[in-house]
Image (cartoon, rainbow, N blue to C red):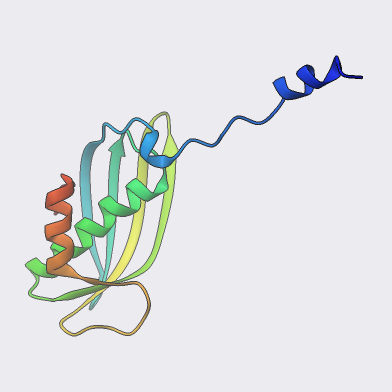
Length: 126
């Protein structure tokens, strides 16, 4: 029975790799912005080299923050983001509301602070 133990150990699941340990060499390939209705805005982003959905979310969040600042608004609120990956190209389709005052909700963004964070992280904006 003891001879089976090494075989079982060889079948063990590998340790999960932290997101920060994954290679990250992003190539940001563009942002398409569409005003949907009043303060509701769609951001379509495209990138290569993402580690996971979160990198695509970050890119869209940076686009939304800069758009709010350009329009003279101080805040954005995340509505939804859909992410897809095809052949190494990541696509994000995000919707945000923009507003001059802090909107209600849990997923609000201080636009100016977010733009500064994006710049520090090397993530391009609109």
